[in-house]
Image 1 (spheres, rainbow over the protein chains, first blue to last red):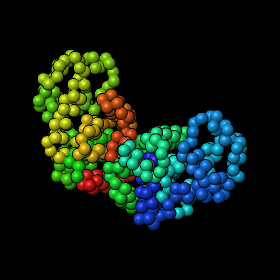
Image 2: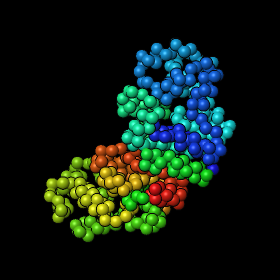
Image 3: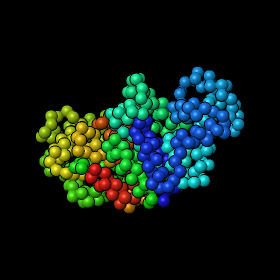
Image 4: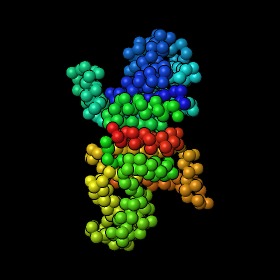
Length: 200
Length: 200
């Protein structure tokens, strides 16, 4: 039985929805934005800012330099780090603590890497074809902006963020125990497979 | 219902065994070395030579130049190609033909790429942790040679072969519909998941 399920996912591939189904089915706690809310509460950050910095870290030196002083050093850390680095460390510490405390599903936040030495983890990657994601993103974002551009930018940012903090390439099957194409397999069946394997 | 299952796999990850179970369960024909036997019969090649060239193509120009004249041009092709290129084309043509003819499981041979436009395909990638593969390779190969070296060489050759013929990176989750860590999930459960998804 695996007590911690990490779900990495492409934007608009249904990873959150699948993660919620899995958590519900197994009776596990579900963490996604909830992690950020805990950090926001404790450290005085804004949740939306945390979300942007916590998964879409920019590689821009100027951007990071500009944020180094702006938000102050959180209580647990010294100064001098960029905001995204600070947030990564806070998230990583929190994820490790939660994983020791209770059975849970953690979506995103490079949790697969942060918990890579934890034998109780099942690491999942959810992705989908571009067209299915475009349709889903259109519904989720409700924007007039070019959805394809947004998707491509999100993909690139997430890959950069993952590489920056893990030194791994985003989307390589071997980083996970199961990878599923949610567009082809369907959200319900994906959740069913994950629950089934978690019970081994 | 998917009528063609392609299984790409790391050496000694159990891909063949899983593929055979899937074929048996679905009542599909199983192709692996069988493809090579068909080509060997028709074109007068030796099966062992075909196996080595058909999945472990070397990038060495000298090697390819040396094989260009040696084995003669197969009947279906003109001369001037390297032996591995000739074999790839023969395999690709045969795989496309088989996929049109009957429900089947095809293991290896870059079948996922060759049939990438076929909507009846379910593409699977099977891999495992190094230690599980080492133990399995030891049993399979029965050799005194350094198993770890053999595994690393096979991994490299297979990745090179795949990149050379498909222009894709070996092991990227998005090339497949499902990727499974057979060492963690077990061969039987892997086969069960594939059969289950094929029936969607």
